[in-house]
Length: 448
Image (tube, rainbow, N blue to C red):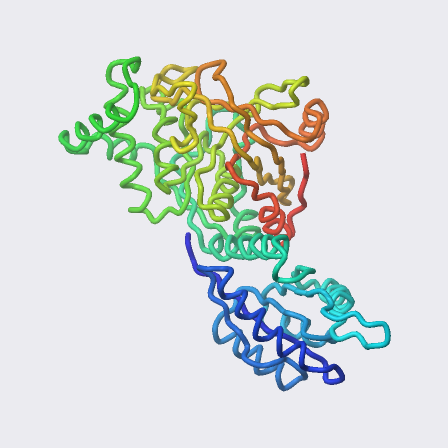
């Protein structure tokens, strides 16, 4: 899930407009894009794009190099034929990049009129249902770079989602209707396919592991975490499950997964919370409680920012501090733990049948999100906030997050919109990129 993004870059001009400014932008903006977005392949059309002949050649160049998205930089006013032609021929989103006017003189002409052109072209692209974005401002403005970063991140997500294989280790826990999913809707919306591996395969793989490998893993765990309060046998079960899943996920070619973590796993004293947290830090993403939609959200978040997500419940609010408490059984990745409040690996905090991290999670900006299917149409629920220093108040792992929406109003919005109980959190502000992903997929966004 790390395919390189190919970005087509062109600078436009109309035949009736002076070319000195467009030529300058062709040089300077093309170079800036190459230098400012490492890890992105910039496909620069080498001359100004003006007229049908240039358009045909430019489209051929972008198609040959498999452009995933096109940045159209306005050198000067541009008619609708160019952006619409690019969208039709290349079948990918177009970014209408309108720099500010460089010269304003009372008795002189406009030299670009880029903003007006972008508005006109954007209206035409909207009418032909061509995905597009508008970015206004100069390359020196930090906001402009951030907007382009969010757009590129969203398109990179889509490129990596298409053809992704989501692995199912079992279905969903008993009576968790919100964790049900529709393969066909997901395939149609995200381009993700599914394969299933029975939990028995997991248990058989655990049982077949060499004793010396398991013992080495147990020693590693004891060196990293306080395991003194784990019940007898649970450390070995943790080690075996960790090694088994780490082996099976790449063996079956799964890009992201979900697991039915109870009741069967609990019956064998191997509830996997702490295992899932460790694997998440290592790039092996597995959503707990068979929640595929939460897993898709976590996969998207990881593709955007490259960091470990945390699948969690919202369990409490504090009206005075305007915070919400996110908690789960102990599946938070170690990179999210806050050592200031102490960290232990202990039994499952509710059922007592496995391993779990008991700790508070670190402060910092967070983005909570979830894609949810309603009658065949996905929505994206989105909440931004700031995780504050937290003292763990119950077993498991938890964090308090300060939000802008009054928390009682937040609960009302959750209820009225049918938001499920699982969120996926990352410790980055990626709301802009998530909105762009939703926009490219035609998914409405519900701001919580």
